[in-house]
Image (cartoon, rainbow, N blue to C red; front, top):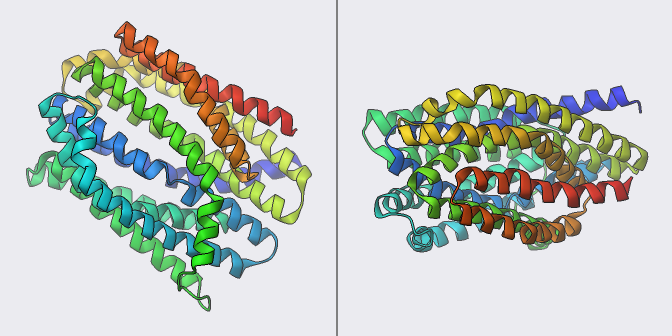
Length: 426
C-alpha cells in the first residue's frame, strides 16, 4: 500500500476523531472561561477540582485505549460479532468502575482537596465543584468505553456527532446555571454533569442498535479480559497522572495567582494534546487492524507516516498558540495578575508543542501495537526523571520554571523513552 493511500486513511480516521476529541477539552475550556470571570479564587478552585477529576477519568482511559485496538484486531480478523461483544463487555466494566468512583468521590472528595494545602476560599470552591462533578464520572467512563468501541469499528462519525452535541449542551447549560440562575461554580459542575449523562445514554443507545442479535448481558469472563488487557495501560496512565498532580501541587504552593494561571495553561495544553491525539487514535485503529490482518509491513509504514504528521501538526499548533498568547488572558479571566502571568507561560508552551506531537503520536502507535508493558515501565522512568526538575522549579518559585520543567523536561523525557522504542521496532 502506497504512502499516499496510508495518508488518506490516516486523515479519514483522524479528522472526525479530532472534532470529537477537541470537544472534551473544550468542556474544560468553557468551564475555565466562565468560572474565570467569577474571580481568581474560583478559578484556582476549579484548577484543583479539575485535575482530581481528570485523574479519576484519565487513569481509566484504557477503557477506550485498550478497547480500540482490541476491537480493530477482531474486526480485521473478520469477527465483527466478537468485536462488538468485546466492546459491550467494556461498557459493563465502565459502569461498574464508575459506580465505585462515584462512592469514593463523595466520601473522599473533601479530604483530597485539603491535601493541596490551598487557602480556605480556594478549597471551598474546589470542594463544591468536585462533589457535584463526581456524579458525572460513571457517564464519562461509559463515553470512553463507547468511543473506544466505535473507533475500533472504524466508525469515527458517531462519536463526533455525540460529543459535538454534548459540548454545545455543556456550554449553554453552564452559562445558564452560572450566570442566568446565579449558581456560580456549582452551576458549572451541574451543567457538565447533565451534558455527560446525555452523551453516555446516546452512546449506549447507538451501540444497542448496532448490536442487534448479540447478547447484551454482562459476561464476567469477558469483563475480566478487558480489565486484564488494560492493566499495563492503567499503570502507564497512573504514572502520567502522578506527574500532572505533582505539577498542580507545586503550582498550589507557589500561590493563588500562579495556580489560577497554571489552570488556564493546562486547559489550553489539554486542548492541544487532544488535537494531537486524533493522530494517535487513528494509529491505534489502523495498527490494530493491520495486526489483525497480519500485515506487518503496513504497520511500519503507518507508524512512520504518523510520526511525520505528528511533528508537522505540532509545528503548526505551536505557531498558532504563540500568535494567540497575548489574547488568551482576557478570554479566560478578569484577574489582572493572572492575565499578566500568562503570556510567558503560553510562549514557552508553544516552544514545546512539536515535541509533544512526536510523543503523543508514538504513544498511540505503541498502544495500537499492544506494547502496554513498555509504555507502563517507561512512564515510571519518566516520573523519576521529572521529580528533580519539579523540585528545582519549586525552589525557584517561578511559574515559568514550573512550565519549563513540565512542558520541556517531562515531555522531553517521554520523547526519549518512546523514541528509543520506536527506533527499536523499525
